[in-house]
Image (cartoon, helix red, strand yellow):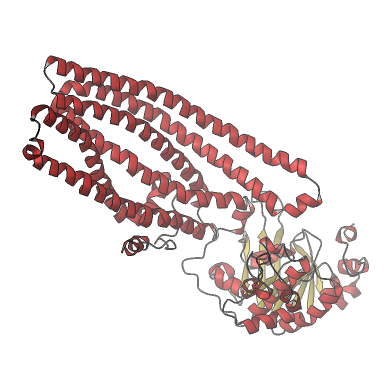
Amino acid sequence: MLDRVVSFFDHLYSPTALAKNRQPPMGLKRFLIYFLDQFRMVFVIRFVLVAIGSIADAMMPIFVGMIVGMLSDTPPGEIFSAHWPAFLMMIAVVVVVRPTAFLLDTLIRNHSIVPNLVNIVRWQSHWHVIRQSWTFFQNDFAGRIANKIMQAGESIETAVNLGIDAAWYALIFVVVAVFVLAGMDPVLLVPVAVWMLLYAILFVIVMPLIARHSEELSEAKSVMTGRIVDSYTNIQTLKTFSTDGHEDAYVAESVTEHTVEFRKLMKVFTYMWSTLFILNAGLVVSITWLALAGWNNGTLTTAAVATVVPFALQIMNMSGWILEIGSNIFRQIGNVRDSMDTIAQPLTMVDKPEAKPLVVERGELVYDNVSFNYWRGKTGSVIDEFSLRVEAGEKIGLVGRSGSGKSTLVNLALRMFDVQSGSIRIDGHDVRDVTQESLRHAIGLVSQDTSLLHRSVRENIKYGRQGASDEEMIRAAEHANVHDVVMGLVDPKGRTGYDAHVGERGVKLSGGQRQRIAIARVLLKNAPILVLDEATSALDSEVEAAIQEQLTSLMQGKTVIAIAHRLSTIAAMDRLVVLEKGRIVEEGTHAQLLASGGHYAQLWERQSGGFLDLEVAAQ
C-alpha cells in the first residue's frame, strides 16, 4: 500500500519534461521562477502543510503551560475527568494533525519535488546548453560546464525547500509565539522585539556576504574541476611529455585559489555565530527574568511562566537553526547565480523561425563571396571573399598548407559557424535558411580529429543512422575494414564485439581503428554530400588501400569535398582547388596543375613518401 502511495508521488512529474519556453532566462529571480513555476502546485501544498506543522509545534509550549496549570489547580485523582476534552485536543494535535501534515509534506518533498526538480533543472539546462554553438564549447572547459549544470539542480532544490522548511516554518511559529506572549503580558514582547530587530540586522548584513562569497567559491570550484577534468581528458599528453610537476602546479594553483575563497566564507560564518550566541543569551535571560518577575508580582500564573520559558528556549534553538539554514540557502543562491551565467546564455546559432528542412535533390554546393574570421574585429580573414561552385556529383580536392582555410570551409558549410559576409548554398538554399539538423543530415563528414562517444561500438556506428539494422551496421564496418577488429574487442566489464565500450573519446582504440569506425559511421549515414577531411590520415598504407576502394564506391553519385595533405589520395578527383590564406590560387585537374608548373606542381614535387611537407614547400 505504502509503495503505491510513494509511487504516485514519485510520478507526479517527469524528470525529462521540457518547459514551453526552452530558453532559461537571465536574472536570478526569473531564472529561479523558470524552473519552480513548473512545480507550482506542490509548492503551494507544501506551504500549507508546513504552516500546519509549525502551528502544531508552536502549540507544544502552550500544552506544557496548560498541563502545569492543571497540576496546580486540580486535586489529585480528578485531572483526567476534569480536563479530558483538553487532553483529547492535545492528543489530536500530537497524534493526528502534526504527523499527518509532516508525513504528507515528506511525501511531496522527498518524492514529488527533490528527485524530479533536481533532474529537471539538469535536463533542461543540458538540453539548452548542448544546442549552443561550437564556439561556446571551444571557449570553456567541458568539466566546468558540466559542473555548473550538475550543481544548479541541487542548489535550486535545496535553496527553495530549505526556505520553506526554515523561513516559512519559523515565521508561522514566531507569529503564534507573539500572539501568545502578548496575550499573557505585552511586556514580554519587548525582549522578543529587540532580539528580532538585532537578528534581522545580522541576517541582512551576513546573508548577502555569504551569497557573494559562495558565488566566488562556486566559480573557483568550477575552475578547479575544469582543470582536473582537463588533465584526465588529456592524460596521454601528460604522460608522454612527463609534465607531472607542471601539471601539479597548474592544478594546485586552482586548489589554492579555492581554499582562499573557502576561508573567506568561513570567516563570515565565524563572525555570524559569535554574534548570534550573544543575542540568544540576552533573549533567554531577559524573557525568563521578566516571566519570573511577573509571577513574583502576581501578574503571571505558574502556567504562563511554564509557557513563556519554553517559547524562549525554542526561539533560541530555532534562531541558530534558521541562521544555519539561511546561510546554506544563500550559499545555494550563490551557486545558482554562478551556474545561471553559463546555463542561461542565449543560443547564438539558431534556426530562423521560418527555416524549413533541407531537401537535397542534386547536391550542388556554392560558396558565394564568403568571408569569415574567427576573431571578430581582428584584421585579416581566415576566408576572404571566397567563391567556389561544386557541381552536383562533382568531386573536388582542397589543397593547401595548415591554416589556409580548408577545414574552415567545411565547418562553414556545416554551419558550425556563420559566414560574416557572402553566402553558402546547397541546391540554391542558403544554409542559414534551413534547419541545422536537416543540413547536417545531408552532409557526411569524416574528419582528421576523430573522437568517439564513450559508448558501445554499435552505438557509435549507428550514430550515422539510428534506425539502421545490425546487418547494415556490420556491412558498413566490413566496408571500412574494421569488422574483424571490432569482433576482437573486450572491455573491462566483459562486453565484447559491437557491445564493447570504446572509452572516453575512443581512447581504448588506436587512431586508425577510431578512424575506421568513423568511416563506417559515414558509410552507414549515406548522405548525398560527402566531406573527407584527412579521412585516412591515421591509417597505414595497407589499410588505406583496402578502404580506398570502398570510399570510391561510396563517392559514386555524391558531391564530394576531400581534404588531404597526402596528395596521392586526392589526385584522381574531378578538380583540385589550391588555397592560400583563404583564397583560391589555382584550380584544375591533377594533370592540368602539374602541366602548369605552379604552386600545386611544386607541392607535388616536394612530397616524400606520399606526404606533403607544406611548410618547406611554402618557402
